[in-house]
Image (cartoon, rainbow, N blue to C red; front, side, top):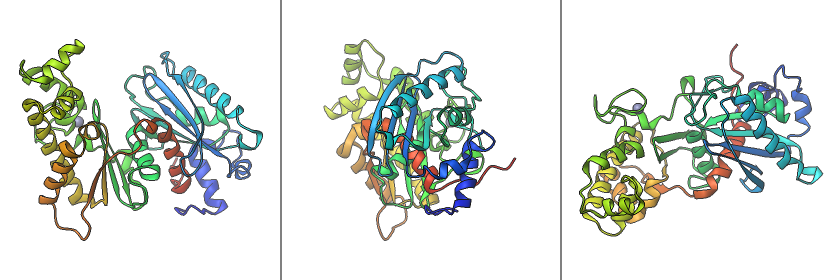
Length: 360
Ligand SMILES: [Zn+2]
């Protein structure tokens, strides 16, 4: 049932698992439209990006609308569905059949894959039945993933990890998000909770983390935690302090990266600390998962080859077992396009690797 060329029966089971069962939308009807387009929806706290695309991640048409959360998730989803229908209606008649919809959203997704859990910046959305609401509104099966898993899928299918079977994606923004591709499919783990790389305990009983645990990776190299450290530690004379003051803002990791590029000693020391902690994290992941590739986003991409990737590769190589092929450690490739491709990555994974229907 994992093969792309699934049998009609497998397709039916898959469509049932994607929220069409008992919704008045017969999966049989959708078997006729299996060659239609995919719709990707990337829901963020401020903007929602919608993209129509194909299996190769080619975007046919796209639009962005404000998410403008009203406190009522169903009302917000109705507006997103309106924008989606409008986008589809603009296509030539032959390209209006939606094969599947993939949704990337912040927060967790429940074990059954239908509801969002505690999404930050989306008041009123906790527990919202996103999958079935959109499936009903759009008349197509819908798959949901949290944004880190969606980004991992997009980088694997369309970006830096294309062609691999075992890939780890890691992004450091406010928090630290991760996604695992193992054996040629997204690894969700029990209860849909795998891939939370940001919450590996890096220091036992260490700094408090936003998740309620202590010593998590995120409590050291996440943007919010790093900013708190910078507020305490940044010397007034450093370029980091100067760049922040020019903005009238508190120092952030972006200022560290910019100052490190200019050779500021404090910024270089901060980045070296970041690299050490990130290398330690990657070594633990390498020992357990043995990926072919690590794809790193955000801060690592901004720091670049000389300030991040070269020292990181050296540290990881020195602290992991020798392999026939060294594990590649590379920057994320999709950049700004990630917003359009994340949802399409989710859609593609749901077609390639359908999950069995959840047990009632
Ligand atoms: Zn944590």
